[in-house]
Amino acid sequence: MTEKIHFNLIIPNDLGGTRLDQALAKLLPDYSRTLIQEWIKNANITVDNKSCKSRDTVIGGEVIVINAFRKAQPAWEAEAIQLNIVYEDEALLVINKPVGMVVHPAAGNRSSTLLNALLHHAPVLKDLPRAGIIHRLDKDTSGLLVIAKTHQALMNLTQQMKARTITRIYQAVVCGLLTSGGMIDVPIGRHPIQRKRMAVIETGKPSVTHFRVIERYRNHTRIRVQLETGRTHQIRVHMAYARYPLLGDPVYGGRLQLPRGATPPLIEKLRSFKHQALHAQELGLVHPVTQKQMSWQAPLPEDLQELIRILKQDNTEAFE
Image 1 (cartoon, helix red, strand yellow):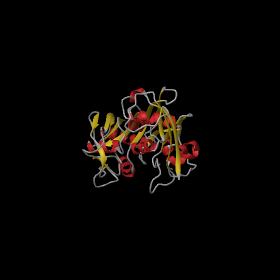
Image 2 (cartoon, one colour):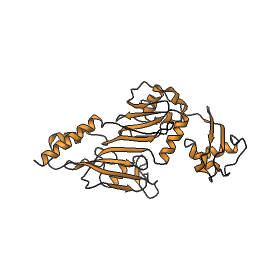
Image 3 (tube, helix red, strand yellow):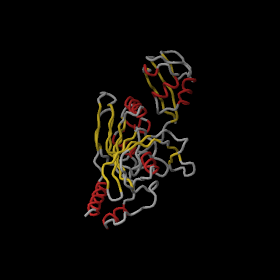
Image 4 (spheres, rainbow, N blue to C red):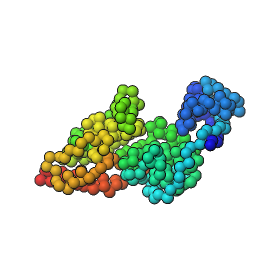
């Protein structure tokens, strides 16, 4: 089956001087540059009502009309799954995702995902790539996600994400005692051998993570983390690279190490905490329609709050 694609666009002035295919690839991030070049070659795209070539240079202000087709996306099932909706209007939706929920269906996770839930909550999302999902969180990372509800919002928010102007702030608990905050700026790519993992490698994509200390415990530190880039597993990989892996991380955390002198409640909690202690707490962006700056916060999930409470209690007893 094929999907009909139709867009009316105006080339922004800031893209003036670039090739047509490059400009359209930036404006339509959900469509590959190769596919866009194919559309141009097949006369599915006009510029100011004229035929065009991929290498043509745009100056800004041109009217682009796209009438094309592509293979239809998989028909994902809508499922009545409860969502924690933090904010919603006609253009976007902000969700507080729980631990354990997969964002997008894939092999082994065809149902019970955030995407399945979104299609039930807002059926209009079936017409958008990935049901309007702009970015993802790992299955066992909780917190805020923004979803576009229109093509305009999807393009706008995707551009904000590429421009690194969407603010994403996390809280995490790491193993070890950090003395101060800092920045980690090393590239991340697919692990050369273990393909389901990511790693710091020279051929990876630029990746920048900022962090600062919130609170120190006996042998753990609670930190505030701000992403400058958004690579897969970025915080988990960067903190493990810095030798302060996230507490409970089953992939990058290494073997559980119990602090010397830890209280029985802390030992029990550390042994039972089976996912990375990471929560996407704050999200900020410019609204794609009103152009107003907006921001949201999501409280820490109960299990992470309980972990922090026990860490604090253990820390107090350590100095009594």
